[in-house]
Image 1 (spheres, helix red, strand yellow):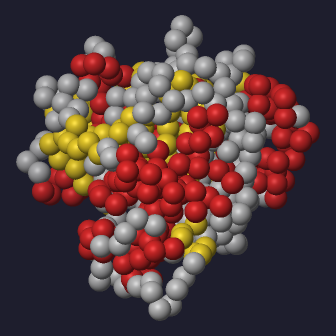
Image 2 (image 1 turned 180 degrees about the horizontal axis):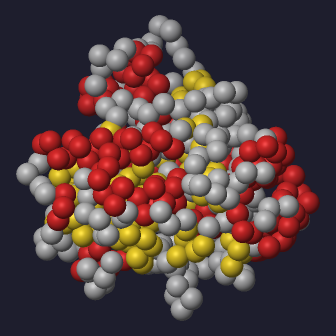
Length: 490
């Protein structure tokens, strides 16, 4: 018997099949082979057709069916991880009204800034723990202001994972964690924030009904079962944004524990039991997946939009024939500090880390007589790690101590240069585990469906595969390189 995890990113959809009794991932696949299309009708905009997420979920399952000797009819429950902060709009028939406005879209920055000023910093930070910023609530207000004919037809406003769950089950619902990531949630009242909705003139009925993160959230319909080759009537039993889910996949559930990921975007995510905020909303606080009334669990999230996409851009610039492992090998040939070549990886929309400014990416210190291709490879990886450290310093100011960072064995964490730079500049141990978001979503489904009796049981096969720490003398070199980078940030 198996569990299915679907991880819907902006680049691809990954499906993983987890064997219930052993806790091992026995098959996985992703689709498409190259990145999914992101459309930018205007500068700073980013949209995707939700139909892409459905198509590539189906294709990933088709790949598993074609290559693995697994009967998908033996799947007992489904968990969903999804790209955060997006906006999907449905009419009363469940039809999508416009392309999804996704996480890296910057169009609602001014909308959120105006709301922050109108509602007041004290109210927003003490109740929402964030500025309304460029999050889902502000994106919905943008549609109201700029596309009134679309807004008038909205029946429900959803996050990307809500939409996939609806497509599978026919149930329109969301989670409190999801509402918090959209900045719809009041952390003092532990309910939807009426004052923000009133300011934005958004009717509360546009938000779906709330269900528990770990629970039976709907049953797969006969139509979806035929389309995906799944058993009819099995539950979607877990749903979480990609970063809370990444933390969950690493068994990061308790105060003081830290998770990181370095995919299309890069994130450091720490769990706390304190209701806290950054006064400039450079890092953001959301409900973690295991938050309860009796045991507060909040996630402090540092996000860098242009992480993996910076490395992918570099690969395109130097020719698609280069593989990422080859790029990583080139980076290893260059000394710490890239001989003065600095990368500021901020070219993928407004960066919350920089107070929601869209400063663009840049390189500094280029010497045409010295720097070659390998320097660029290292400079980009160092720039991403240095950006993480810039945000981690803000998390320190909020009382978050960081001694160990857990990550999956994927994306930039496959690179020795990136792992060692992050360990050196933060002073933390880096622990790498045999998991990813799709596997985490499958484990979450097991908990939500009652197949696993506890989180401990769900993580019996989670294995540490690497550990990285840096000697003090080498750490000092990384920290000196970071200070040089930081001085030239602005």
